[in-house]
Length: 165
Length: 146
Image (cartoon, rainbow over all chains, first blue to last red; front, side):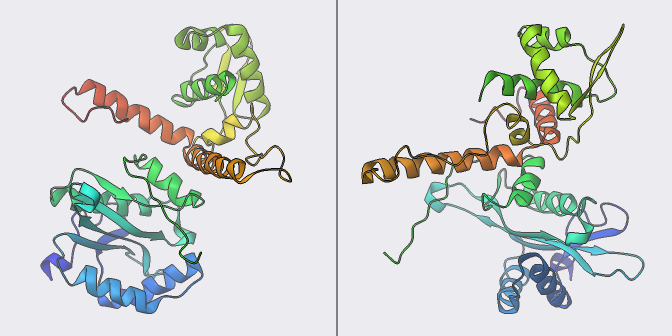
């Protein structure tokens, strides 16, 4: 247990526990992701679990928000995944958040904020001073959320190109 | 951003920081160094949009009546400027590759601007101001970014 079991700052508010992911959560996470993105990705999440919940867990954080108390409709109400990344184009090590979701019917109850605070605490404990993420411009929900938590445009800009021309 | 949009954002932040407080146009005008006349027109537009309420009489003024967590900067700007329009190319039929390439660049910038303004609510601005004030009060803390 220990390192892989509980994230710091668990049970931040009544009714919600923030903790490290467990294997038994995977089906719930796949279901939540599918409800949000309308695409089931069980293989992807199995791989993410193997990589982010079982290896180098001192710098990889796969956290879930779990409803405590009475049998809730959904067991896992949200998740956030991130890791310490460093030296990409000279970037000093920073905390990278690359997956985040909250059960649609339970939004605006502070669950996302608790997940965000918990992973911030983990990155801080790992010695990080900066936390980054990448969000599609049209995803106003995530954009607004990360903005409200204090994130602003960073010094890097994301570029891409189509490879089939 | 046009001056009216900027004034509207200043006024809304001023009022939303304490929704119970009534603030006069002249008070806001003095704080942001703008004419009460110009500001009165801006407040009228905000009132029609339901973002502020006016209280008449002695001690009257305006108070915030919108939803600070739902009102974005883009919403406010849209009351004073056309934010709905797509990036425009003057003459599509005659446009050269050079004009199209510049058009693509301008659209890219426009998209980023809209996405940013559409993601920042009045509530988020209040938090950002609080962080800036805290940072100013702690000179050794992280310096201003950008």
